[in-house]
Amino acid sequence: MDLRLAIFDLDGVIVDTARYHYLAWKRLGDEMGIEFTRKDNERLKGVSRMRSLDILLEIGQQEKRYGEKEQLAAKKNAWYVEYINQMDTSEILPGVLPFLDELRAAGIKIALGSASKNARIILERVALTDYFDVIVDGNLVSKAKPNPEVFALSASLLNTAPQNAVVFEDAQAGIEAALRAEMTAIGVGDPHILAAAHHVIPGFTAFNLDKLLYVLAN
Figure 1 (cartoon, rainbow, N blue to C red):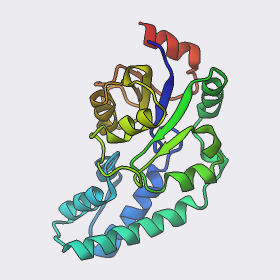
Figure 2: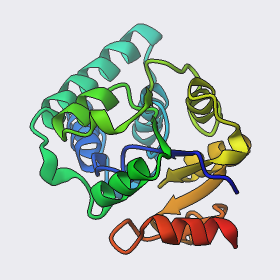
Figure 3: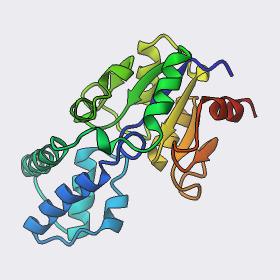
């Protein structure tokens, strides 16, 4: 494989903002009288904000009109933004920065492919914006993962063929999106959950460009 592009999901791959999502959804759930647990929060990984709200409503066996749902989603997002605005460089996951440095030094393009509409805020807070040749987030795409739109657009904007791109993802929906985009999928996290990926790593602490190239060649 001629590696030309590395695409990264954001939450759970570069930073761990899942806890902030959880705190914001739990806060909304508490206000609505819905018990929302950390286990419930796992169902929200990699899915859109409105779908996440639908899942919360399903858990609480509640129904809301579209206008009410928009208000609730906006409230949750305001709380989430409040939390992420307090982030700093200490929240970059271990090993990510050296790996990005290696990719950049090797001339490999770097893209962010995230469903989050707050991706740019997070990257700014952790001082990583300049590492990415393109940032494709929830403001640029309309279809959530497992639809491959976010990854296909990333490659298209950087004039790169899908077979020359690798995707780093921590969610099943993201792995499926990468496969549907005809890209190499590297799971970051639990190999049982991410079994569909071409290869799974626990994180970036013991991972580098040489290891990536070895994985891609075998």
